[in-house]
Image (cartoon, rainbow, N blue to C red; front, top):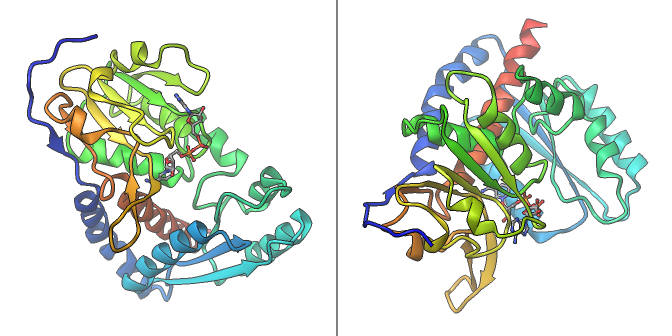
Length: 299
Ligand code: NAD
Protein backbone atom coordinates (compact mmCIF):
# COMPACT_ATOMS: atom_id res chain seq x y z
CA UNK A 1 0.00 0.00 0.00
CA UNK A 2 1.51 3.43 -0.92
CA UNK A 3 2.19 6.05 1.77
CA UNK A 4 0.55 9.41 1.20
CA UNK A 5 1.53 12.98 1.90
CA UNK A 6 -1.51 15.22 1.90
CA UNK A 7 -2.02 17.14 -1.34
CA UNK A 8 -4.72 19.57 -2.40
CA UNK A 9 -7.01 17.78 -4.81
CA UNK A 10 -7.92 20.10 -7.65
CA UNK A 11 -11.45 19.83 -9.03
CA UNK A 12 -11.47 19.36 -12.81
CA UNK A 13 -14.80 20.88 -13.79
CA UNK A 14 -16.22 19.41 -16.99
CA UNK A 15 -18.98 22.03 -16.79
CA UNK A 16 -16.40 24.79 -17.10
CA UNK A 17 -14.59 23.12 -20.02
CA UNK A 18 -17.94 22.55 -21.75
CA UNK A 19 -18.72 26.29 -21.46
CA UNK A 20 -15.38 27.00 -23.10
CA UNK A 21 -16.22 24.56 -25.92
CA UNK A 22 -19.64 26.17 -26.48
CA UNK A 23 -18.24 29.68 -26.67
CA UNK A 24 -15.73 28.47 -29.25
CA UNK A 25 -18.50 26.72 -31.23
CA UNK A 26 -20.65 29.88 -31.36
CA UNK A 27 -18.44 31.38 -34.09
CA UNK A 28 -18.54 28.19 -36.14
CA UNK A 29 -22.32 27.91 -35.73
CA UNK A 30 -22.91 31.48 -36.88
CA UNK A 31 -20.60 31.06 -39.83
CA UNK A 32 -22.58 27.95 -40.85
CA UNK A 33 -25.79 29.98 -40.44
CA UNK A 34 -24.41 32.53 -42.91
CA UNK A 35 -24.25 29.64 -45.38
CA UNK A 36 -27.86 28.71 -44.57
CA UNK A 37 -26.84 25.61 -42.56
CA UNK A 38 -28.11 24.77 -39.09
CA UNK A 39 -26.37 21.70 -37.65
CA UNK A 40 -29.06 19.07 -37.15
CA UNK A 41 -28.99 15.81 -35.27
CA UNK A 42 -31.24 12.77 -35.62
CA UNK A 43 -31.44 10.60 -32.52
CA UNK A 44 -32.83 7.09 -32.69
CA UNK A 45 -34.24 5.47 -29.57
CA UNK A 46 -35.40 1.87 -29.70
CA UNK A 47 -37.70 0.72 -26.92
CA UNK A 48 -38.64 2.52 -23.74
CA UNK A 49 -35.53 2.36 -21.51
CA UNK A 50 -36.10 5.35 -19.14
CA UNK A 51 -32.36 6.15 -18.82
CA UNK A 52 -32.01 6.33 -22.62
CA UNK A 53 -34.98 8.74 -22.80
CA UNK A 54 -33.41 10.97 -20.14
CA UNK A 55 -29.99 11.00 -21.83
CA UNK A 56 -31.43 11.82 -25.25
CA UNK A 57 -33.73 14.52 -23.83
CA UNK A 58 -30.81 16.29 -22.16
CA UNK A 59 -28.76 16.16 -25.37
CA UNK A 60 -31.70 17.58 -27.36
CA UNK A 61 -32.24 20.32 -24.78
CA UNK A 62 -28.65 21.46 -25.28
CA UNK A 63 -29.09 21.51 -29.07
CA UNK A 64 -32.21 23.68 -28.71
CA UNK A 65 -30.46 26.03 -26.30
CA UNK A 66 -27.69 26.60 -28.82
CA UNK A 67 -30.17 27.25 -31.66
CA UNK A 68 -29.39 23.93 -33.34
CA UNK A 69 -31.95 21.44 -34.61
CA UNK A 70 -32.59 17.90 -33.54
CA UNK A 71 -35.28 15.30 -33.97
CA UNK A 72 -35.81 12.10 -32.01
CA UNK A 73 -37.11 9.00 -33.76
CA UNK A 74 -38.80 6.59 -31.35
CA UNK A 75 -38.85 2.99 -32.59
CA UNK A 76 -40.79 0.23 -30.93
CA UNK A 77 -38.89 -2.13 -28.63
CA UNK A 78 -40.30 -4.89 -30.84
CA UNK A 79 -38.48 -3.57 -33.94
CA UNK A 80 -36.22 -6.05 -35.70
CA UNK A 81 -32.58 -5.26 -36.52
CA UNK A 82 -33.60 -4.98 -40.19
CA UNK A 83 -36.32 -2.41 -39.39
CA UNK A 84 -33.88 -0.29 -37.38
CA UNK A 85 -31.29 -0.48 -40.15
CA UNK A 86 -33.90 0.53 -42.69
CA UNK A 87 -34.87 3.61 -40.58
CA UNK A 88 -31.20 4.58 -40.33
CA UNK A 89 -30.67 4.19 -44.06
CA UNK A 90 -33.53 6.64 -44.58
CA UNK A 91 -31.78 9.14 -42.27
CA UNK A 92 -28.46 8.59 -44.09
CA UNK A 93 -30.14 9.77 -47.28
CA UNK A 94 -32.00 12.66 -45.68
CA UNK A 95 -30.03 15.88 -46.24
CA UNK A 96 -31.78 17.62 -43.34
CA UNK A 97 -29.67 15.61 -40.87
CA UNK A 98 -25.92 16.11 -40.49
CA UNK A 99 -25.48 13.70 -37.59
CA UNK A 100 -27.15 10.46 -36.51
CA UNK A 101 -27.03 9.07 -33.00
CA UNK A 102 -28.31 5.63 -32.03
CA UNK A 103 -28.87 5.59 -28.29
CA UNK A 104 -27.27 2.55 -26.64
CA UNK A 105 -27.88 0.02 -25.29
CA UNK A 106 -30.22 -1.44 -27.90
CA UNK A 107 -32.77 -4.00 -26.65
CA UNK A 108 -31.71 -7.63 -26.28
CA UNK A 109 -31.86 -9.55 -29.51
CA UNK A 110 -30.89 -6.59 -31.69
CA UNK A 111 -27.69 -6.93 -33.70
CA UNK A 112 -26.00 -3.77 -32.39
CA UNK A 113 -23.01 -4.19 -34.69
CA UNK A 114 -25.23 -4.32 -37.77
CA UNK A 115 -27.12 -1.24 -36.58
CA UNK A 116 -23.96 0.78 -35.85
CA UNK A 117 -22.46 -0.29 -39.18
CA UNK A 118 -25.51 1.02 -41.02
CA UNK A 119 -24.94 4.65 -39.93
CA UNK A 120 -23.29 6.68 -42.71
CA UNK A 121 -19.62 7.18 -41.76
CA UNK A 122 -20.10 10.88 -42.58
CA UNK A 123 -22.99 11.26 -40.12
CA UNK A 124 -21.58 8.97 -37.42
CA UNK A 125 -21.20 11.69 -34.77
CA UNK A 126 -20.79 9.07 -32.02
CA UNK A 127 -17.81 7.60 -33.85
CA UNK A 128 -18.94 3.99 -33.35
CA UNK A 129 -18.89 2.83 -37.00
CA UNK A 130 -16.02 0.33 -37.51
CA UNK A 131 -14.50 2.59 -40.19
CA UNK A 132 -14.37 5.51 -37.76
CA UNK A 133 -13.06 3.26 -34.98
CA UNK A 134 -10.33 2.10 -37.39
CA UNK A 135 -9.42 5.66 -38.38
CA UNK A 136 -9.06 6.60 -34.70
CA UNK A 137 -6.73 3.68 -33.95
CA UNK A 138 -4.85 4.53 -37.14
CA UNK A 139 -4.16 7.99 -35.72
CA UNK A 140 -6.21 9.75 -38.40
CA UNK A 141 -9.66 10.20 -36.81
CA UNK A 142 -12.81 11.40 -38.58
CA UNK A 143 -15.23 11.36 -35.62
CA UNK A 144 -13.92 10.63 -32.12
CA UNK A 145 -16.44 9.09 -29.68
CA UNK A 146 -17.84 11.83 -27.44
CA UNK A 147 -16.95 10.61 -23.94
CA UNK A 148 -13.24 9.85 -24.57
CA UNK A 149 -12.93 13.02 -26.66
CA UNK A 150 -14.40 14.95 -23.73
CA UNK A 151 -11.98 13.34 -21.27
CA UNK A 152 -9.04 14.29 -23.46
CA UNK A 153 -10.30 17.89 -23.69
CA UNK A 154 -10.49 18.10 -19.89
CA UNK A 155 -6.84 16.99 -19.67
CA UNK A 156 -5.82 19.52 -22.32
CA UNK A 157 -7.82 22.38 -20.80
CA UNK A 158 -6.20 21.92 -17.40
CA UNK A 159 -2.72 21.54 -18.93
CA UNK A 160 -2.24 17.97 -17.68
CA UNK A 161 0.87 16.49 -19.27
CA UNK A 162 0.35 13.08 -20.90
CA UNK A 163 3.67 12.68 -22.74
CA UNK A 164 5.54 9.72 -21.23
CA UNK A 165 3.02 9.47 -18.38
CA UNK A 166 1.43 6.21 -17.34
CA UNK A 167 -2.31 6.26 -17.96
CA UNK A 168 -4.25 3.36 -16.47
CA UNK A 169 -7.71 2.83 -17.94
CA UNK A 170 -10.17 0.74 -15.94
CA UNK A 171 -12.73 -0.61 -18.43
CA UNK A 172 -12.36 -1.85 -22.01
CA UNK A 173 -15.69 -0.89 -23.60
CA UNK A 174 -15.92 0.36 -27.18
CA UNK A 175 -17.57 3.52 -25.87
CA UNK A 176 -15.00 4.62 -23.30
CA UNK A 177 -12.08 2.32 -22.38
CA UNK A 178 -10.80 1.34 -25.81
CA UNK A 179 -11.11 4.72 -27.54
CA UNK A 180 -9.55 6.69 -24.64
CA UNK A 181 -6.67 4.19 -24.70
CA UNK A 182 -6.20 4.82 -28.43
CA UNK A 183 -6.32 8.60 -27.93
CA UNK A 184 -3.85 8.71 -25.04
CA UNK A 185 -1.36 6.30 -26.62
CA UNK A 186 -1.41 8.06 -30.02
CA UNK A 187 1.89 9.21 -31.41
CA UNK A 188 1.19 12.91 -31.15
CA UNK A 189 2.60 15.82 -29.21
CA UNK A 190 -0.41 16.12 -26.93
CA UNK A 191 -0.80 12.38 -26.20
CA UNK A 192 2.18 9.97 -26.14
CA UNK A 193 1.15 8.34 -22.87
CA UNK A 194 1.98 4.76 -21.91
CA UNK A 195 -1.39 3.07 -21.48
CA UNK A 196 -2.45 0.04 -19.46
CA UNK A 197 -6.01 -1.27 -19.88
CA UNK A 198 -7.59 -3.10 -16.93
CA UNK A 199 -10.90 -4.93 -17.01
CA UNK A 200 -13.15 -7.32 -15.15
CA UNK A 201 -10.67 -10.18 -15.42
CA UNK A 202 -7.64 -8.15 -14.27
CA UNK A 203 -5.95 -9.72 -11.26
CA UNK A 204 -5.01 -7.35 -8.46
CA UNK A 205 -6.46 -4.12 -9.90
CA UNK A 206 -4.73 -1.98 -7.24
CA UNK A 207 -1.28 -3.05 -8.39
CA UNK A 208 -2.02 -1.28 -11.69
CA UNK A 209 -4.02 1.70 -10.47
CA UNK A 210 -1.27 2.54 -7.94
CA UNK A 211 1.13 3.00 -10.86
CA UNK A 212 -1.09 5.52 -12.64
CA UNK A 213 -0.10 9.12 -13.24
CA UNK A 214 -3.50 9.43 -14.88
CA UNK A 215 -6.30 7.06 -13.89
CA UNK A 216 -9.44 6.76 -16.01
CA UNK A 217 -12.14 4.95 -14.03
CA UNK A 218 -14.85 3.66 -16.38
CA UNK A 219 -16.13 0.35 -15.00
CA UNK A 220 -19.59 1.52 -13.89
CA UNK A 221 -19.06 0.25 -10.33
CA UNK A 222 -19.75 2.85 -7.62
CA UNK A 223 -16.75 3.42 -5.34
CA UNK A 224 -14.53 0.87 -7.12
CA UNK A 225 -11.52 3.19 -6.77
CA UNK A 226 -10.51 4.40 -3.31
CA UNK A 227 -7.62 6.36 -1.86
CA UNK A 228 -5.51 3.28 -1.16
CA UNK A 229 -5.57 2.39 -4.85
CA UNK A 230 -3.93 5.55 -6.16
CA UNK A 231 -0.57 7.22 -5.81
CA UNK A 232 0.05 10.68 -4.43
CA UNK A 233 -0.81 13.40 -6.94
CA UNK A 234 -2.48 11.09 -9.49
CA UNK A 235 -4.96 12.72 -11.86
CA UNK A 236 -8.21 10.80 -11.56
CA UNK A 237 -10.95 10.98 -14.20
CA UNK A 238 -14.20 9.49 -12.97
CA UNK A 239 -16.30 8.41 -15.94
CA UNK A 240 -18.73 6.22 -14.03
CA UNK A 241 -22.35 7.28 -13.64
CA UNK A 242 -24.56 4.92 -11.69
CA UNK A 243 -28.02 5.80 -10.38
CA UNK A 244 -28.22 4.87 -6.73
CA UNK A 245 -31.51 5.12 -4.80
CA UNK A 246 -31.41 7.38 -1.75
CA UNK A 247 -33.67 9.45 0.50
CA UNK A 248 -33.27 12.73 -1.41
CA UNK A 249 -36.27 14.49 -2.98
CA UNK A 250 -35.34 13.01 -6.35
CA UNK A 251 -35.12 9.56 -4.78
CA UNK A 252 -31.73 8.81 -6.29
CA UNK A 253 -28.28 10.26 -6.86
CA UNK A 254 -25.66 9.81 -9.54
CA UNK A 255 -22.54 8.12 -8.26
CA UNK A 256 -19.14 7.73 -9.91
CA UNK A 257 -16.62 4.87 -9.85
CA UNK A 258 -14.36 6.81 -7.49
CA UNK A 259 -14.87 7.19 -3.76
CA UNK A 260 -14.32 10.96 -3.90
CA UNK A 261 -14.08 11.29 -0.13
CA UNK A 262 -11.28 8.76 0.22
CA UNK A 263 -9.16 10.07 -2.69
CA UNK A 264 -9.48 13.67 -1.49
CA UNK A 265 -6.07 14.85 -0.29
CA UNK A 266 -4.30 12.07 -2.22
CA UNK A 267 -5.31 12.63 -5.86
CA UNK A 268 -3.71 15.65 -7.49
CA UNK A 269 -6.93 16.27 -9.40
CA UNK A 270 -10.36 14.69 -9.76
CA UNK A 271 -13.40 15.14 -11.99
CA UNK A 272 -16.62 15.38 -9.96
CA UNK A 273 -19.75 13.31 -10.55
CA UNK A 274 -21.96 14.93 -11.68
CA UNK A 275 -20.35 17.92 -13.43
CA UNK A 276 -17.22 16.19 -14.71
CA UNK A 277 -17.15 13.97 -17.77
CA UNK A 278 -20.96 14.03 -18.31
CA UNK A 279 -21.25 17.65 -19.55
CA UNK A 280 -18.26 17.09 -21.82
CA UNK A 281 -19.91 14.11 -23.50
CA UNK A 282 -22.77 16.37 -24.57
CA UNK A 283 -20.41 19.19 -25.60
CA UNK A 284 -18.48 16.78 -27.82
CA UNK A 285 -21.69 15.52 -29.42
CA UNK A 286 -22.53 19.13 -30.33
CA UNK A 287 -18.99 19.68 -31.61
CA UNK A 288 -19.07 16.50 -33.73
CA UNK A 289 -22.43 17.53 -35.21
CA UNK A 290 -21.06 20.99 -36.05
CA UNK A 291 -18.06 19.28 -37.68
CA UNK A 292 -20.38 17.03 -39.71
CA UNK A 293 -22.36 20.10 -40.85
CA UNK A 294 -19.15 21.92 -41.84
CA UNK A 295 -17.99 18.92 -43.87
CA UNK A 296 -21.40 18.68 -45.57
CA UNK A 297 -20.90 22.04 -47.24
CA UNK A 298 -17.38 21.18 -48.33
CA UNK A 299 -18.41 18.03 -50.20
P1 NAD B 1 -19.46 -1.21 -19.87
O1 NAD B 1 -20.31 -1.97 -18.92
O2 NAD B 1 -19.63 -1.42 -21.33
O3 NAD B 1 -17.95 -1.50 -19.53
C1 NAD B 1 -17.47 -1.59 -18.23
C2 NAD B 1 -16.05 -2.08 -18.28
O4 NAD B 1 -15.57 -2.17 -16.96
C3 NAD B 1 -15.90 -3.47 -18.91
O5 NAD B 1 -14.93 -3.38 -19.92
C4 NAD B 1 -15.43 -4.36 -17.76
O6 NAD B 1 -14.45 -5.31 -18.18
C5 NAD B 1 -14.84 -3.37 -16.79
N1 NAD B 1 -15.00 -3.82 -15.40
C6 NAD B 1 -16.12 -4.28 -14.80
N2 NAD B 1 -15.86 -4.62 -13.52
C7 NAD B 1 -14.55 -4.36 -13.32
C8 NAD B 1 -13.70 -4.50 -12.19
N3 NAD B 1 -14.14 -4.98 -11.03
N4 NAD B 1 -12.41 -4.15 -12.34
C9 NAD B 1 -11.95 -3.65 -13.51
N5 NAD B 1 -12.72 -3.49 -14.60
C10 NAD B 1 -14.00 -3.85 -14.51
O7 NAD B 1 -19.63 0.30 -19.47
P2 NAD B 1 -19.31 1.66 -20.29
O8 NAD B 1 -20.36 1.88 -21.31
O9 NAD B 1 -17.88 1.69 -20.70
O10 NAD B 1 -19.53 2.72 -19.11
C11 NAD B 1 -18.75 2.69 -17.94
C12 NAD B 1 -19.30 3.68 -16.95
O11 NAD B 1 -19.19 4.98 -17.50
C13 NAD B 1 -20.79 3.52 -16.61
O12 NAD B 1 -21.01 3.91 -15.28
C14 NAD B 1 -21.47 4.49 -17.55
O13 NAD B 1 -22.71 4.93 -17.04
C15 NAD B 1 -20.46 5.60 -17.54
N6 NAD B 1 -20.51 6.44 -18.73
C16 NAD B 1 -20.53 7.77 -18.48
C17 NAD B 1 -20.53 8.64 -19.56
C18 NAD B 1 -20.53 10.11 -19.29
O14 NAD B 1 -20.92 10.86 -20.14
N7 NAD B 1 -20.05 10.51 -18.12
C19 NAD B 1 -20.56 8.16 -20.86
C20 NAD B 1 -20.50 6.78 -21.08
C21 NAD B 1 -20.47 5.92 -19.98
